[in-house]
Image (cartoon, rainbow, N blue to C red):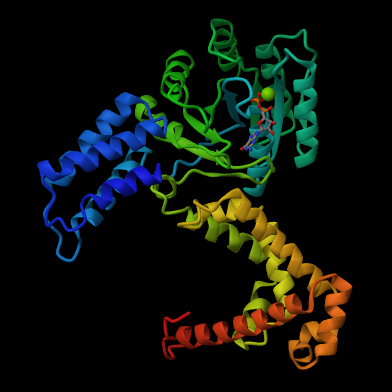
Amino acid sequence: LTTGFETAWNKLRGVDVLTKENMVEPMRDIRRALLEADVSLPVVRRFVQSVTDRAIGTDVIRGVKPDQQLVKIVRDELVQLMGGEVSDLVFAKSGPTVILLAGLQGVGKTTVCAKLAFYLKKLGKSCMLVAGDVYRPAAIDQLKILGEQVGVPVYSEGTDVKPSQIARNGVEEAKKKKIDVIVVDTAGRLQIDKAMMDELKEVKKAVNPTEVLLVVDAMTGQEAAALVTTFNIEIGITGAILTKLDGDSRGGAALSVKEVSGKPIKLVGRGEKMDDLELFYPDRMAGRILGMGDVLSLVEKAEEVMKQEDAEEMQKKIMSANFDFNDFLKQTRTVAKMGSMSKILGMIPGMSKVSPAQIREAEKNLEFMESMINAMYPEEREKPELLAQSRERRRRVAKESQKTEQQVSQLVAQLFEMRARMKKLMGVMQGGSIPALSD
Ligand code: GDP
Ligand code: MG
């Protein structure tokens, strides 16, 4: 997708003003890029039309080149297409909030139940899950296991009870226990069929949910538009949850949901871990689609993890430029905690082209460094100078970590380089001189 857009911008290099004529080719590239990303054709048509209208109509902004102008227009229109703003979950004004989940089989409904419970607990709300998928005993067990994992009760009955009945009983039970939010899991089918829709309608009638969220796999291709349309017409949805965004999704589903249903994507799931559910930010998604990376998400995640760590102390250390191997270890572990390297790299602009082999390499590198640091004496970790000054010490570390002496030397050099860079950085932050751009 990214390359398609890049081709479009490149064709406008050196152009003075956007005209109907010079827009033809770039818009064709954008159209192709969107179709290749599995955005449905009607959505693409409308999108291309509104971008063209806006681009040709805009005044030339001084200092902004036409290609940059088009990037901005495309980005703005993408954000609008996805609803513009973040859409929070809606909670009932009085009594418990019921959230009904719907969607095809395997899209991640049951996983989302538990992730939602985890998410809601962080918001300070109590939660109960209701096992409304009665077709496979395994489905009930799966929900029970996940519920236990996130520490919320799961209401279930036998496989011979109607889902609408279970849902109704579950909500009653939750009311008695004064639970804030009830999430009802339902059964999916491989394809849309009447029995599934009828069942969902019945469940909906039985529990009168505040939110009916359609769970959509981000990998869904062209058919996403039809899928969302059908669910919305048949049962009436209030929003969607996009799952498996950690995969190699081309973004098509994300772009179609709002346009075809008028309902926003509210949350996204980006992994199999329980804390992988996040609010959906149309501007970030637009950035990701355009290949500008998901920088804000990355920054937020880093802040969250760092908060749990002793961020303040780390900062003090960095400021004093006494960054040692203990801090080095802490940092690499923070990175590890933030999720796998590949996920992090995917969020950094320009890094999406990093190959899996390169990522594995980087991950191995971290392990590599950790094993050398682990072989250091505490005083060596605190005072890297000791290693810099003593070949004997470096030899010992190399031997113990089964690395070469040269590799240990490199690591030590790297640490001093980091110190130097941080010193420079601190100079800038404290209003000092700006370092030369040579590094
Ligand atoms: P359901 O049939 O809709 O209830 O789907 P499940 O919740 O059972 O999930 C189906 C599979 O998708 C499971 O193996 C999940 O672990 C996996 N899964 C769910 N959400 C995500 C996600 O956001 N990312 C990834 N990579 N896998 C997911
Ligand atoms: Mg399920």
